[in-house]
Image (cartoon, rainbow, N blue to C red):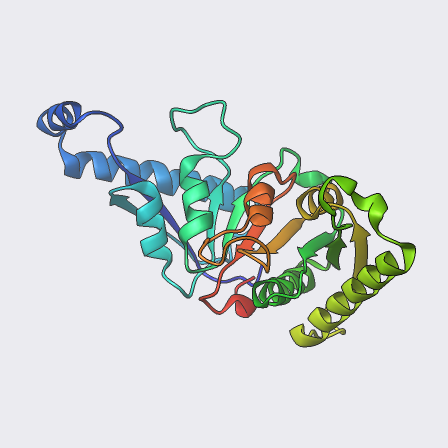
Length: 272
């Protein structure tokens, strides 16, 4: 990380019916509860900062009342990096991804990092970026390059391609020269994406990978043991009205490591 200031925000909301909320308000001083939460958040943040040996980083804490996801998105604005855990203390204990982190990844206007993976010490100094030629993926590649440079990690730019199906005939219906052309076009897309990203080769080593296979599954496989997986919020596939595409949604839900989702707004190149 760049040593940027960190603001730890706790957004709390009573998890219950309107009657339960009224009872809580009657029995508990909201101001007192907020102060107690503030002390707990500050203590937790201090422990994390000291444990990470990052005592030189400016850290502030804040406690807000409201819907957690909406509050975090509002506090992040468009010029920050929003970092959330993969799931918190919500009611769906068996869910793979919590509703707050899912909502933040989908609706935030700033880059969002969802911290996933159980073994952060197993990282192999790699940052993996999914590339499909879309503007979102070019932004993701720039973000990933910056992240790799500051981690001293290798940047792996990955573009996947699949064999188009022809109805019930399946992939066997395509002649080899057609498949070669599809692969060649995919290689061109990967090269053009790297060129458009205008990366500084002196800051991080770049390796480009052209992989035949489903996009999400291929990215997740390559992200095993990585420091970070970076994807654009949506690419060229699917419905244009979607805030997140199927690939980014699947990766956020199942990534084996922390994952960054890059949206349209925000200065993504200067955040990590």
